[in-house]
Each structure stands twice: as C-alpha cells, then as structure tokens.
Length: 155
Image (cartoon, rainbow, N blue to C red; front, side, top):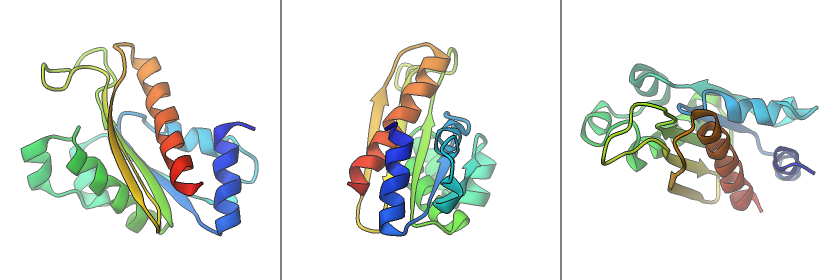
C-alpha cells in the first residue's frame, strides 16, 4: 500500500483530518493525498503559500520572522503548519518551505534546502533537508519526506 493510502488509514482510525501548507512543493502533497479514493473523508485542504503575503495573511506567519529568518526557516515552517491547523480546521498538518531550484539558492541556503514541519494533536516534528539541484526531484523528495514525517507521527 502506498504511503498516502497508509496515512489515510491511520487518519481514519483516529478520526482525524489533515491539511497541508505548501510553498516549495506547490500542492504536490495535497495531490498525493487526494489521489487516494475516499480521501475526502480525512483531507481538509491545502494552502499553497508561495508568497510571503499568503504566509502572513492566511497562515499567520509573523512578518518579523520572515524578515529575520527568511521564508526557508524552522520558525516559518512551524508557523505554517500551525497556521494550516487553524485555516483549514484540521487535526494535523504538514508544511514545506524551501528552495526547489534551479535558481534562488544562497551560500547559507543552497538549492535543495527544504524545511518541513508536521503537527498532530499529540506531537510535532520539524527538520531541515538538503536535497539536490534538480527542481522536480526536490519537489518529489520534499513531498515524500513530509508524508514520511506525518506517517511517523501518526504511527
């Protein structure tokens, strides 16, 4: 059984719903979850927050944290995940913010840097990943990492 279906089964068992707040994955997490028939039972929705304005206004990310730490940071991705809980009225959420590439990297945050957060009513996790330089591969890798993170929290 594929990972998104396994997540769905765990959410059904718990009676929980999930959502996603996605920047660098551009809705790919939502796509992977909704590929599963019946996912409307447990998937509330997604906010594709590519711009900082959307992060601030829909997900309640602090402007000061965007200014101080940048969109690709632990502080911002944690706030994105918590903001998704509120905006989407769900029980758990994942959030991604990163530099998919091929451009946009800096020496401090090279292409392939992605912060991912997952939150449930019981626990949370946040981690920085360093993938490669290929955009599509980075989007796929970040999606897979986010789903694995949520799966571990739900198990």
